[in-house]
Length: 398
Ligand SMILES: [Zn+2]
Image (cartoon, rainbow, N blue to C red; front, side, top):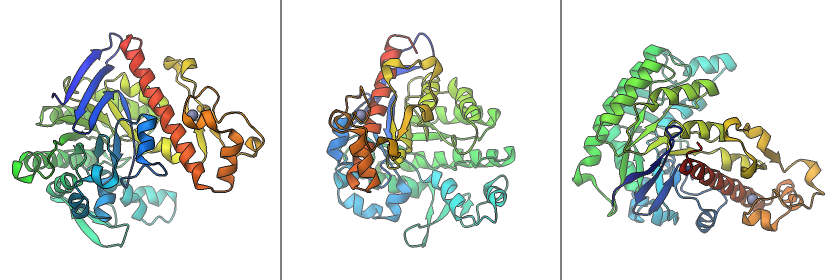
């Protein structure tokens, strides 16, 4: 079976419909990829993901390596078997943690010095990035360990997600052009090492195939982004991902970065955009030819009581509302007495059965079911939204 095939190209934009075939199922693209960081979609049973219609989920290599460790996951037969997340899974390379943990571990005296610690020419304080790899500090027990391109591949093979990412350095924002270029060149060198390790049959662990994505970097610089896109697309990879976006730059800058690379993206390989989850950003990336996008937003805000209210039948994709305008905060007291469905018109199990008042009550009382219901609904909306976009693409309306 062919790994990826494009089934329709929109006459209106670069948007396309496709199918990603994995041993754990087929993904209809464009698809939203919710994040199950530690091999669990927080508060949801795996069977509920099936019910919601989630097609593909994301797990984080860094977190699974620090705990419980890749050897245990391998021994269990891989992450699908270990967690019973029996759907196509994607893992990251731990490259993003070079960025996000460096930010956390920097000790800021004030907001400005915090920025200075992670920007430009400077290396993060606690972590070391060198040509061979990156030294991390474990958030579990403080011990240090090293990620190299080969180690990242080995860990991801042990974990066993269907789609895996090459090891990259996620460029800080704002980074100087000189630093962004340095990180990009390093990412390209690391990709070659990842491919060598990944393609060597002696390194295969699980019985089913895994597919490798290379990651485009280059920061906010047009020439670097294009150069990186061209380089990555020409390598022996199964898919291409765009990294280092939505790391603090403005929405306009983020969209520009995606626009710059769109003409360099491979026509016959799936393209993933790392870390994008707002409705308007998703539409913008889909029309640039992006097939999948992951984000923690939908599940993270659900656990804060923020519920998507978007009515797909009423949206105008040309003028997509901001996320803030299609959310309600169920914790607000005005919902205590509101016995209408959580979201009118939503067909999900939660909205068919529970009222705003009840979900409000659960959140107010910190009852665990509240997190489950809110997460269920928000992920259901994301699935409906992606399905709606696929419908529009099929009709050449997007
Ligand atoms: Zn609902």
